Amino acid sequence: MKPMHAFLSAAFVVLLSLPVSAAAGENVSKAPNIVLIMSGDMGFFDIGCYGGDIYTPNLDRLAGRGLRFTEFYNTARCCPTRAALLTGVYSHQAGIGLMTGEQNLPGYRGDLGRNVLTIAEALGTGGYRCYMAGKWHVTRFTGPDGPKDNWPLQRGFDRFYGTITGAGSFYDPATLCRGNTYITPVNDAKHQEMRGYWLPDLRDRLGWIS
Image (cartoon, rainbow, N blue to C red; front, side):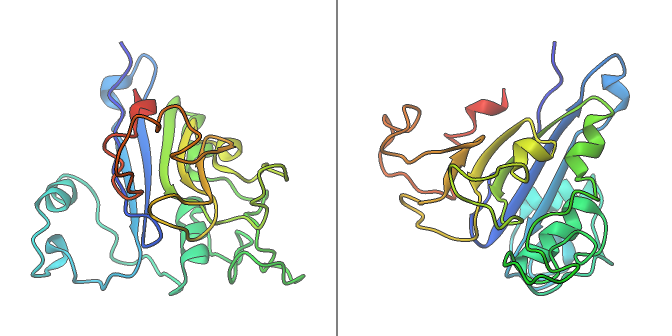
């Protein structure tokens, strides 16, 4: 029996979730499930587990049984902050010193560097199955027919559902992808039976996790 896979639904554009599953193999019971959450456009004390007044019981329970970052330095920009969280190094070392534009300067290439490992690539060596839902936005190569070597599936993730670039419509996002393929609620068979599609609501669209 495969281990339970953890996941988190995410509001796109303003929230990135990076779910990583439990480890596979003989020592499943000893390897923890990991859910790594990055949420943008929030103050440090906004949610309950950090002392805020907003009622966030599910997040508070996760925090109470897990690890909360208190000394992770973000850059006040989504791309470099995400690059640092994905790789564990400073954003400039990861190649995303600013955003995803090519600046022709070391550390400002707008593309996640091949000199660093992502958390998914690192955990994969230990038998983990890694899944991501949300906003990727750490490569300047976003075309459906262009280079995809820095898309999630090529950087250690087993499954991906989300947007490759930074923003889009909540109702029919132009950059919505499943794996390496651009999809829309109109042309994708898994979406055609749905009514009232809304991108941040992933509860009915994460069947790929099982």
